[in-house]
Amino acid sequence: MDSALIPKGVKRCPPWQFILGIIVVGGVLLWGVFAMLLVWLKGLNQTNMNNAYGFALWIWADLAVIALGGGAFFTGFLRYIVGKDELKNIINYAVLIGFICYSSALLILAIDIGQPLRGWFIFWHANVHS
Image 1 (cartoon, rainbow, N blue to C red):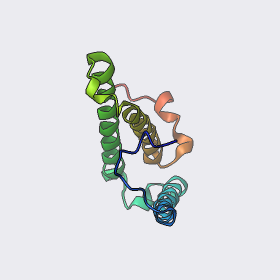
Image 2: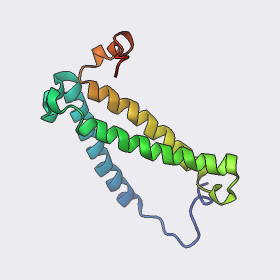
Image 3: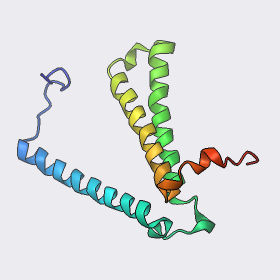
Image 4: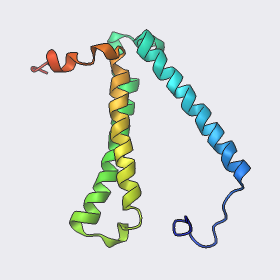
């Protein structure tokens, strides 16, 4: 079923090694979800930041994720608009990575707010002079 995706000569890892890797990645993911919930429930103080330095961690991560997603969608532009046939093998993965990156950027912005119940303030009290 997946033989078309795996090049010839590449050996797959045994199932126990794959499951061990999934457990490690899952542990890191759960740790991140726990940290995200702490920020949402207890506010910006959990990241050891205050209002004087509010643009440090979350905005940096947001810009990094948006840049990675932009590169993925630029790959789509090169494949479909410019017509670079060399990219036909990776284009599906590139678009998927771009979608995941832009979705992650929205999640990072929600975390940056610190209080998601006030997320609608950006639409109602827009800062039009900034």
